[in-house]
Image 1 (cartoon, rainbow, N blue to C red):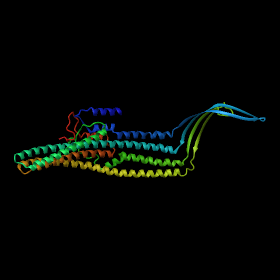
Image 2 (cartoon, rainbow, N blue to C red):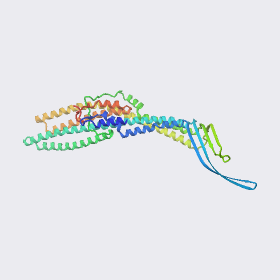
Image 3 (spheres, helix red, strand yellow):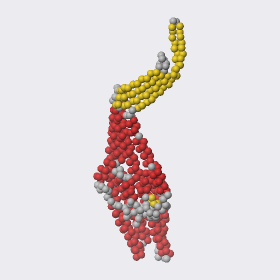
Image 4 (cartoon, helix red, strand yellow):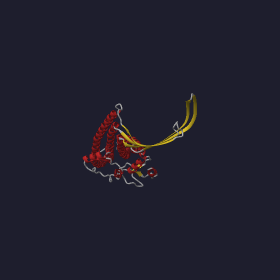
Amino acid sequence: MRGVRACLLFMLCCAPAAQAIDLLQSYQAAVAEDAEFKAAEAMAEAGRQVVPMARAQLLPNVNFNYTHFENELNTRSTSFGRTFSQDSSYPSDTYGLVLRQPIYRPAQSAGYRQALAQREGEEAELARALQELGLRVSGAYLNALLMEEQRTQVVAQGKAIAAQLAAAELSFKAGQGTRTDVDDAQARLDLNEADLLAAEQQIAQAKHELEVLIGAPVDDLAAVDKQRLQLVMPDPDTLESWVARAEANSPELTALEAEMKAAKLEISRAYAGHKPTADLILQRSINESDNVINPGARFINNQIGVQVAVPLFAGGYVHAQVKQAMAKHREVEERHDSSRRKLAAAVRKEFQAVVEGIRRVRALELAERSATQSVISNRKGFEAGTRTRVDILDAVQKRSQTRLDLAEQRLVYAISHLRLKALSGELGLEAVTQVNDWLVEMRSEVPQAGRMAE
């Protein structure tokens, strides 16, 4: 995994300055480098260990014990009216080897099944983190493209305003124009410069957000190619099918279902406090010099048997544990039901966003053609004396806004498409690659990032 990360970073850092970074590269780098996702991976790995830990409670347990003492013995005795005293010292050693095999441990058995459910939940949480990472990377990438497109339109407006300002000044000097035309164009140009500064700042911030995710500097971005963008209905094309798919595959619901299993098994585990336990015990012990009567004696004792423990009374602790586990199970059930309803609402929202996004893109494409024709008509009208320079600038500004709205809607369509996939647990490499195919192909020289291919 580290080798893949190093390779991706080397490719990104050593790429030529004119080479664009596409969405797929950004996603792959984020999977390798994003701190939040790596934390989720570590958490999942830690969660997987609950299974071997729980299994260990059902497997044999072997202990070896050794004890060494230095003994000092003082013996006092009376015989025929006389008292005799004798001091002696000797070492004593005790060796013990004990094997304990659980035979009937209902609490540990329930704990093992609970650990399996918990591991399933951890895997679902990791899948959920991957879906969220895909959305964060895609959102940051597409937002950066939008900021680039906004700058492109601001620059285009600035060029148009500067041309009109120059023409207005020439006309004014020739005595054919008005000072109002010059002042209006100059005011618009000053405002355009302020807008350009704001656009540059927004681009820098958007790229920084993407850099944080991929762990590498960002130069140019591969832009959306309107010729490659596929405006297609979701597959399947019915809302009900997507809701059913999301409910079956959503990592969030899968994690909650696993939590419900674990909570239900916690009830069984708590109730096991009322049940007896039984263990098979094999023991071998060796005692050397552990007898005050005969300090030099050596005893070897081999034992095999069954130990049974029957709980009688625990002050109501087990009963309270059972009630607590039942309440937690109900709480998880309610959260699952709430998440399922929210998921259905989110799927409906994103499904409609994709369907309506297709219509909005097509409508804005028509609006862009109309806005372009409006600029041409206003210029001709100015030449004919029926339009003013202000009318031309207004038409140019409207066209720029329409183009920006169109670019934004194309990006909204793309991110809605990915969100719909994420809600059904399908936002992975294949889904990102599909959207990446809508971008300008990677070449040694690419169009300015953010500018829609004409």
